[in-house]
Amino acid sequence: MPHLLHLDASARPGLAGTDEHGSHSRHLTHRFVRQWLAGRAKDSVTYRDIGQNPPSFISHDWIAAAFTPDERRTPWMKDALAESDTLVDELIAANVLVIGTPLYNFGMPAALKAWVDQIVRLGRTVGIDETRHPDPYVPMLGDRPRHAVILTARGGIGFGPGGDMAHMNHLEPNLVTALNFIGITRIHQIAIEGQETGGEVLAASVKQAQREVDELVAELQDTLADTPIAMA
Image 1: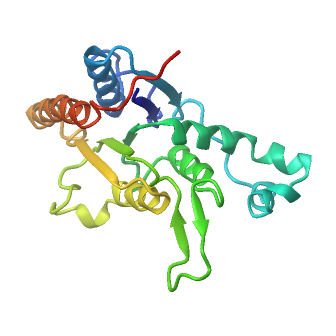
Image 2 (image 1 turned 135 degrees about the vertical axis):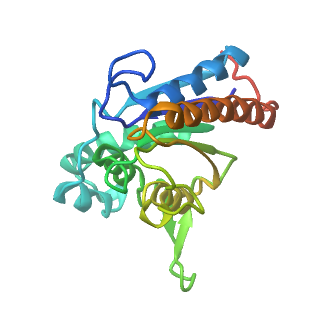
């Protein structure tokens, strides 16, 4: 059966509309997952709050271990990659990756970048074929259909494609590049804008994003309708 991996990257722990100073990106991801389970209650979800519990930054030991062939890794190398292995396993298991993230200073939060660095792994999510030129990299997660849903909240206006500020948005383009690199190419994006403006501008953006989330849930559930239900 379809399995969802739900990530929240906002530094704000609460939900907009419910908690004071709550997160709009969390509000969208929780709506997406709630709507999904309302239609497919038997599907499973793994939740990871990287905004409140950030993954580790990669270190010298991590790099040394990641670029050592598995059969030559010592116990300390395996320890250095243990967290990464867990995060990669979660990603590989998912049919739908749901990422909720704010736009912080034109890019992704540090916690989300740390997650990206942990899951772009040689031999696990990307391979190298030295006979391929000029691009030797081989995505490893294109083995079956996987979808990524990027649900974003932005303080300003016009950061989406074609907007006046789009050239300053390095969040979604960065995420899409990283996900495509490892083989996840079915990407869906929905954003809320205007938090700094507030009022009717923000309210209209929230309403539109909620409607788009509901429509996307229905679309993806139709797309994945034939995914077999796992037997116990």
